[in-house]
Length: 254
Length: 219
Image 1 (tube, rainbow over the protein chains, first blue to last red):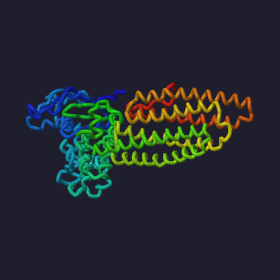
Image 2 (image 1 turned 90 degrees about the horizontal axis):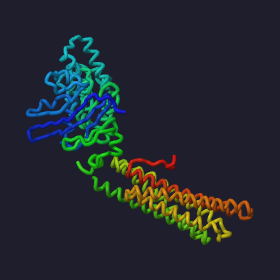
Image 3 (image 1 turned 180 degrees about the vertical axis):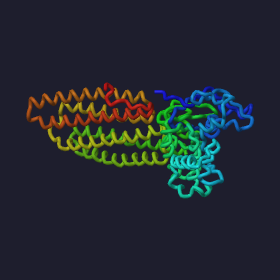
Image 4 (image 1 turned 135 degrees about the vertical axis):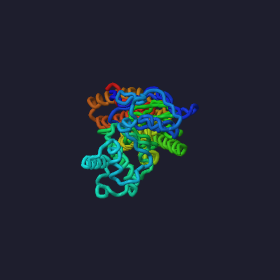
């Protein structure tokens, strides 16, 4: 029954300041090649939790983390872990599309170049494969040298996904990646997520319950920094075990 | 939003209670018309079942609108999907009452039939089952719903009695065969009405527990 956990989190606690605790004793095993959705009211810690998985939270001054996060058995908070390597394995896509002010091609080639790929034919291949993987190749293949900023919001977000795919990550983290998009762009990204989970492990933060039920296999409900419930999405949305989950998903609070 | 949604769910409860009351009335009116030979009773039972069709549409429309507008999950989804299933059972009860009424209009002779007492008992039990099943749904009372399911055995036993009695009568007295066959059909309809009561109770349990019990617990 239990799928192999790609990311295994134990007793994870996080403080933004000595008196500001954002995560409290989180234990969770995120299964490989599945979509896990993180839900909960604003300020519940779900985005903070997402950022602990690629150590983006390290960038916040004064933050303190305790507990354990193991990626493929390796403790990612071990001081000898190369954070650049970690973030190559675990890519992030943000709420608002964040294209770099450069061409479409250079946006996607940015990561591979950073990791030392200079060979032009190889870069061309990576760019095409990534743009195809993000289901945007057909829309941009004739204007790769044009500025990424000229793309629509939905296209920019798929470009950002392509940019994340270009470094061949293992895990994709998405923080409300469709909340700034219209329904058609949202639907394209959701279809993309369904296709990507064949190869990648995906963790998404979403405020959209219907989206969580549509695209995730597993769902985790956070409240006030605690993981309240984690399980199969269908189970969690049809017969939640915890009353607080039921109250949240049926709109009784939050 | 939640307040308006809760008010809509409450309306749904009222509509289901209204429709189950109509079903209960139809069962009672039609069975008493059997023994009294009251044509008017049979006709008013048919009228009642026609009004149930409008109620069915109202309930279905409300459910579909709530599914569209609220995109319900968890207990809300169970409440609405159970209502959609139960309303079909209630409508079937109406159809069966109408069928009984049609036979009742043709039954002119021998109103003083010994079997009518058993048939009357069947109808009272079946009508009570339907009513209690709907209330167990409205009150989210799985225990009360399980009791409804248990009552089905009593109706089944009465049906077997009626059937046995009428079968031997057909064998002994060819002249009485026509009426006996009609009465067996009526008893079978009542037995089916009780089964719909069981179905409604199963959905009431589903609403509370999230688990739909098998139609026959022995299976």
